[in-house]
Image (cartoon, rainbow, N blue to C red; front, side):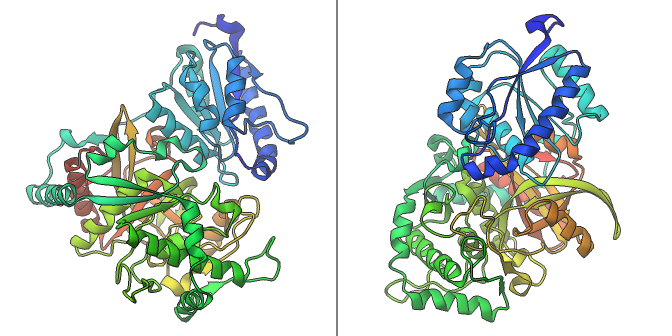
Length: 539
């Protein structure tokens, strides 16, 4: 871009939530962020034109539907540079249609703040744009005055793109693995492709996450096939679960030492009745999965089911745990006995592939296979307790298994989901992730091919007051993992990662984490994915 193009004016749009209460609650943070961003642009000699106004009736200024997004983009100059500014969880499909045909430079921007999930929203938008083949650049900042942001913003204003450091990435084809590790992984991949597997999808496309939908032909090439299931069927199956059966699940959890933060006001507090409904969903989901022969399932919940029943999050975490309340078929047979039924939160099918492969491969390697996705919510540098590193806050409303927590079930609690997102309540499965070595990963779609980035890391134990501070700055009802990623900086991660979600699984020790990472890479490569090692993985 030359200095005189478009009178040095940049368009600004803000994609928001579909839920009115979320948009209203997050609007103040968005306003503050836009003011800081406008100041940063003015220092570079540029002005901002907001492409859609504040709505006095709705009391926010977000694009809050795909319909609105298309209407907004119809009236924009498609050649003009545009910034998508995010301080809130956003539904990507609100702006995806317009961005696919926008010809001017595109920049996604989020504020470095964990209170509202703007970073999470931006990462989802980035992964979705990558899948859609839309060229874009991305930036983030705490206050939009730091040197990194200022220099990169100038780079975008002058040249229409931003380049981030990716020196931490090595593609599978560029390295040589130990022969035994590669053989083990490829044998696993060949067996999965031969035997095939079924991915149960309870309604596709949660919360506008275009990047979380895998085209069928790409999925089929891995040997995994979707069984498209309906959440209305899940709700109907819940009605067939008896109160006695639900009570047995709850009693099992109480006997394990799990705590429930029950109150008497269902609008704002978790009630025992909500928990029992969740127990019915747990039973119903397991029975449907067995009926259809599913090896992994994902429940959307956030659209549709949220208007009928309490949250699915307790259900998801239980399903991902090998030690979980037994569920029986009508003939008395225990379903998935002694096994987890890997659940991918928010029907993120990329996480579904990852969870299925990881769970069974880890068991073959002789390690516990419990795995979960988390949101990459936020993070800060921490020094103390033998730690001097950038420590990420990984946080998710559901899917985290008790096996990941300090104390297991005894360290787990269930708290009411925030009313802003969960009108009918329901409890989370909350805990602090235990310290230990990790393998992290993310499957994504790029250039109409499946890719996977993976590396090693560590779940670290922070002082209780620091963990609580991080919880209080994010969502204290949700399970938390404080994690370091080996050989990957904050900016490298943000500049590269193609999703709001990251998959994590524990390894028995550091050496096995590296070995399992190598074996998993070979397995995924054999399944047809293009695999990339990120950070310090021993090859």
